[in-house]
Amino acid sequence: MIGKDGEQLGILDTRKAIDLAQGLGLDLVAMSITSDPPVCRIMDYGKYKYQQKKKAQEAKKNQVIVEVKEIQLRPKTDLHDIDHKAKSVIGFLEEGDKAKVSVFFRGREMEHVHMGWDTLREFAVKLNDKAILETPPRLEGKRLSCIFAPIPKGKKMNPGHLVESMPRTPPPRRNSGAPYGGGYHAPSQQPQAQPAAVAPTQSSSDGAEKA
Image (cartoon, rainbow, N blue to C red):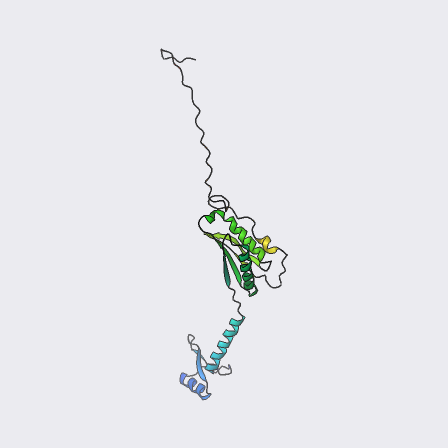
């Protein structure tokens, strides 16, 4: 058993331990009931709970929670809208959050995925080096996305670093071997060589071949 000031009181009978705590106007709290014998402590349980709650609040206050905000674009989003949404992303970054910028395609727009890459690159220009590229553009289904993150504190970046970090051209498709934006190109088929014609042999009236 542990006293109110943390001193060791040894092993006490349960009834005696309760009487001792009540005599001090405090509580007898089981700290470890799985040990043999169980460990108990004399304390003000209400004050103990308040202190634990206070510690949890302080830990939560010091904890940095980073959110990922998403901005949606279209392949033909005009420059005015790109500029407006880029300002929103800069606001997210200044608050310590990240931004996922996605370009959505519909139908036949998938044949011109390169337009989405151009849109993301233009978006990076509008961010004016106020972010770093955490995740490069990646095509997932009909969505082309990348993630921008705040520049780490104290880290100096070169002018134009963000645009330079953006890939200039999309990678080739894995399945067809055709570049993004070019649609599906079936493998070219070479015409098969035809066997050369063989001149028929001429035979004499008696069945012998003539030279």
